Length: 291
Image (tube, rainbow, N blue to C red; front, top):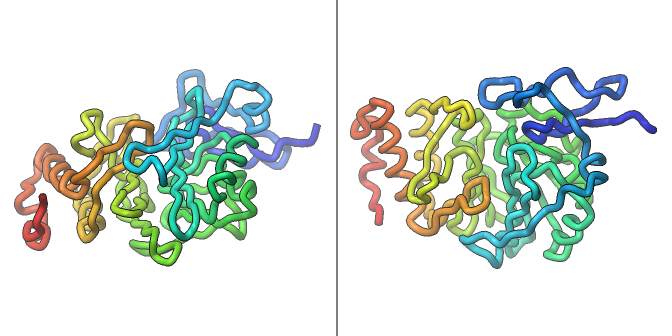
């Protein structure tokens, strides 16, 4: 058997290169830092080949609530690693994939191709890098966009097809897709805005009530985000019309009034962190009209 070239962390799903002897690394650097964790029992690795051969996993294709015709969730069943969804966005200028999942098989490739294929993959932050190289290659070496501020966390890049973008905003597909980088959860944490839909990943978390969002440095370890970072997130989204908010998991969606929900959630968060929200936000934010 040929030496294994990469291994997948069972806890976070990140695909990581093997060492020079074809063995998995001693630890997963994504999990071995304060925003993640190593699960009980210690570090464990698998491979994409092992996942396929097991016959255990399949990807489900679930229309989103916000726009079932143009946005389709792709999620692995049973749940693997973090369990996030990727979202296929069907735009007038071609399709993009928001965030990435670990598992990829021929059925998934054929499904995506039947809906027009992919022009690009855009990933919000390191916890969702997963099998980005495999996804890129499966669709002809399409570009993968991750923010340069998170470059240190990329374990298995898409090579020449990996684009580390810079700054606070990126326009793709003739401006139809806008990607924002407010930071917070990671320095390069990103959001995607399309057709008044804001795809938020972990930059903000859609609450169980689906009436608010929250902000965390570490969600599994319950470390809150500093109010200054929350303010930065709000100021990045403030100029845009936002109706719907789509989180990282199935059913984590808020339909309607999205920008106002972000604003009110940010104010509430700030107050509960012991800061004076009336002074914390600039006058220009207060002057905006919210419905």
